[in-house]
Length: 331
Image (cartoon, rainbow, N blue to C red; front, side, top):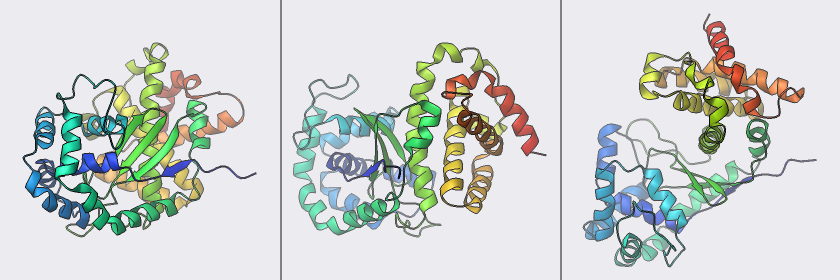
């Protein structure tokens, strides 16, 4: 019996609208100053096309929120709550500026985005078809179930060739776990790769975003059982600890990286996982990743033997096992 595929790939005009507004703020310039990178021609062209509405109230409202360090996830979560094309919501979140949904609708009209997207439809369709090709033989839920129990949410992947150009976003919207992802960055100023160029990259990008949402919810749900567990420091590098100061952050990043590696090992190759682990160690100081992979391998073996029903049964002894595993793999 074949495993049903469980990732739906789609485009979403609400995401494209929020991306377009973001392109008219100073975010693109700041992201380049932080990490210079080549961007998709459509993203650059969108920014140029919308130059005439860069002072629109919808843009000014988003800029004000960005200046207050509002996370990008908040914008796109809000976008996916709106009805399209009305852009209506029964009750706006308290952090939303007054009438912002109405301003977004006016920005869509004044910016002639319907015409722009139609003119640029071929590049959007390419991104869609490339992504659909990558997820044609993919089923993440069987692996996720071994850790979290039954995952009832729909898994959605939305390719985004506009902004943000270098950040993957994890969004929970109604009964969906959504990964909004730009194409993979190339070296220097080169344009990004097509979505179907590197299966391993797409798999881990999506799986890490879904995993992140599930871990956050899982740790909150089991906060009482985890109260003692999180008092034991994890064996991570100083570089990694500086970037992710809390126990929950460290665990989440290492966990989603590890399950992504295990998925690639099973569905791609051992060489793929080795290259990925090496990259994470060098670029992000994730020296403990091999230890986390080792611990989760043992968990999966014990799960198959019926020793655990889900992750919470294993977590009380996790810090000790992880510390030992991290020491062994470092030898």
